[in-house]
Image 1 (cartoon, one colour):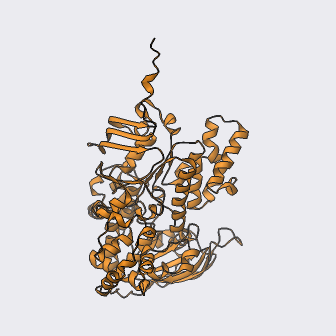
Image 2 (cartoon, helix red, strand yellow):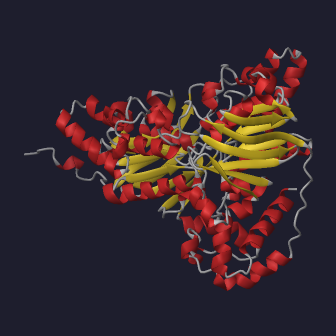
Image 3 (cartoon, helix red, strand yellow):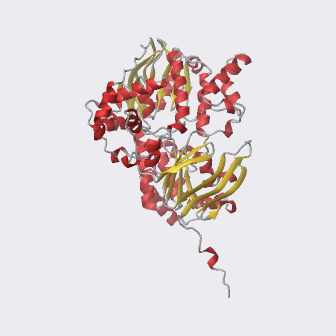
Length: 579
């Protein structure tokens, strides 16, 4: 007698995700975004998917979690299996039982009024009994160290805390696969480091499969990854261990920044090999390269900095509280910015950086002190009047965009100012080309990725030609090529006399582009110095939630006499290469 039992025994239960000759084309596109993808991710693996903007890495993520084809419509050929099941036969609810997604923008993930409600949301949908629900919520929030905040509103939390809540919200359902879409984009360096540690600990405790989509490779490699999957133009071009990929030199060719210590060793003529274990500076033996690193230093001529002009912005003993007599978000801040400078404002999430931007733009007024613009007291100026001098690019592009089409969005400010259409068209085209968006000029904004929307908002401010350009995280979500294009363009604006002031968590950006770094911690200004000095000062790093640059660690491990000079020479060499 045949019982029909053996037909399932050959299912591969070790595979978490498997793409088989998988191609996907968005309904609105004329060509596929993914071409013939063959990829296997085993259960319990921890992999990183990297690639330049538009390479298809986010689309891969959308396929895994079911947003494609259930939300983003299009044509599919081939197969995708999740936990051995064909996703073509699963609805998005069924897939959510297997895959939990932590979005790049945590705010877009919250549905509850409190942390506890938000984490419990999936359990409520499953009609879990209240006593069991409370127990699971408490256990999960304890895992991510957010149990003291169960009654807090998600919007009251810092960026790192929001991400922990988002992670708890997907972990509470005991999913087997955790997908992180650019988890570091909005986090300060120390919080980003903690986030990578949290992801690693989560994998160890739960045994879940971890998939991280991220640009910031060096930060992701703070904890060991099993593989890096490199994509370009919708195809997988490399799938190997971090040691093999970092030794191949392939990253820069495809718009991904390699770790700074790898770049510094390469500049010195050191051949990077897998046997050196370049995945982590902690595992590398670099003392043998002391002489070659020192010789390289001697060959570098420092790049001279242009002298800044007159004072354009000044804070004089400025304090700010949202409630009269309440906690000071900013406390007695004083600094000045001169024309033609490119400076950075750094500090941990919640330090007061965004509040500082709002004060500069006139969205809020100081509780005490004085803000000067072009030598005049700015207190009597309206927001419109300040906008003639200050152009502000916000951190979250969704908070700026108000038009459906890209060209219309970028030119809208000029239209409101009454600029002639011919001039609008010329300036919009130039800004779109600079920001790498010209091929998409007639697209709807809704078809863009988060990083591409960010570039739209930068373009919409660049066309206004402000004297002082204020950017909140200008390169967040950008691949190395677009990052470099944007920063090169900002340098061109700087050379024309426009002053650039950037709020950033990107320590690489600070090192390479900022003349000086203004560092905030707990509402106070704790340092105003060169980026190299800031990122070599353990006290400032700890107080401001920054992260010591790996160049400093490399110099120390190699036994160099002057690590600070080594960092500054590296920056000079990078500037020389760019010029």
